[in-house]
Amino acid sequence: MGGFDADRVVDDFVAGRLTRRDLVARLMALGAAICGAPAAARPLGRAEESAPTFSAQSVDHVALSVSDVSRSAEWYARHLGLRVTSQDESSAFLSCAGGDFLALFRSSRAGLNHYSFGIRGYDQQDAARRLRAAGLAPKPRGGRMYFDDPDGIEVQVSPE
Image (cartoon, rainbow, N blue to C red; front, side, top):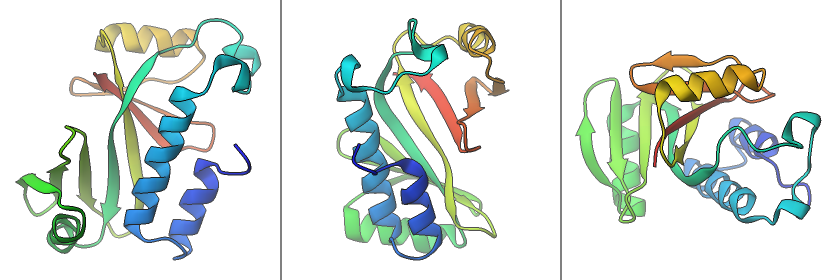
């Protein structure tokens, strides 16, 4: 992808070279590009030579760790037109017009918390089985399933 990768985007955000808005936009663009790339253009690793573990249908949401949930929720509402759908002292969920959402979680360290892909026909037990079969460590929480990418960035899969 011409040197555009999630690691570099997150590093730029942590170093203060990107705003949260830029971080969200670039990660969503990267996810859209990966999902839309022809199979021949995608780099293949040994585990990817067969069918993929999942078939992501959308970038469901991005979750950020923020120092002040109220301040960040107000910022995203004011500057991006997101609508707060629920909020408390430790988290806020803001919806986009298209149905995707942004999650904010209070933390002493700002940055990417996790991102989620919508999976058609999602089933938590099936997701755990697929992850184990792919050599990944499933981390179930509630009805959601999380796992780490090669750099330790948390990925979530959820219903489409």
